[in-house]
Length: 485
Image 1: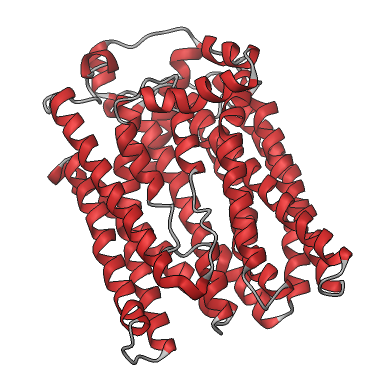
Image 2 (image 1 turned 90 degrees about the vertical axis):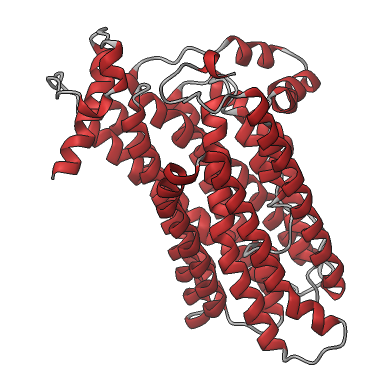
């Protein structure tokens, strides 16, 4: 109860300052955790608004995570003789996120808060339902027929559209609604961010397990219909919960003022909007090497994502086994979020990032070593190499999430507020779209390790930038942005 009271006090302190037009003193801002509880304004329930955001985020993330896990296995079931459909989806999905990232961010910046978030939810959930129904239609058609390929194409296109919607809803709810709710109160924002991250990791852990067991112990058609039904039923509660959050919080009800940058980007040509609102802003930041290093870590086949899941299913693993390894990877990432604060306090932000990226590098080397030896002629059972590979990938998730947290905090601390939304969108969009011809998997593993090596060099460059540009004594939590850069 004490933790809930403290959390509610922090949220109330944030909202009371905006709703009443008051301003606390500098000493009170530095010691925000010691603020006395203000009077609750009539109709203000900030804790209800926070819980509503948690609930809507969970509903959205659960449905998307189930479909992300299932779609690769479904397309492999549709076309079992090859990974062509799976790789085509990976390519289209990644390119869609790359080229839509700037437009999604610009749309959210210039659109009303509720309308933008609900639009992204409707896009995401509707696209998942249409993709699922297209896959079901294709499974019923004769392989190789016109109807089969039409269904497969619709599955890929609508699946990619759902990823764009999920990207937009995450940007809107996690990056905008939570910040507005906390109104620059760092203590409250830290608690809300931790809650959102816990929801992400919980869905990453449990949703693939649920989808995998549905596919293993019922039928693939039943699993498709169940996932489609969830997403069809979820979008109205998701939007209603956002309305509840606004009703409970004056700051969320307040009209959003579009930034000059968003208006300029919207009125410009398509080419100018793409460059200035996205990649142009990206490379103007001093910390772009760190953001690009994080993006390159996702340009890989050495992950527990779509490509590896489909390949191991092709090798004979069951959906239940694959979902359990995905869950173990999520637990590994969850451990990193628990250890991150203590590592940060003991070693600092830069050292924590270095530890994370090197942990991942060592884990990946240990994971692929048996596979490489087998490819070079050493005898090792295929099941053994697969389990060692998956064990190494599970361990690498700890380093990846640790590095992700470190880079994210660097961006939050040292990137201007008007650019912070654009930068992560472009970084997250650069996921793997390597065309996976798995008969040449040794070359793909080597290519993935080269991407990791390049990420190491870029992160080294960003650390040097921090050393020479941002003084060590500058504490972003106590000083404004202008004094830190």
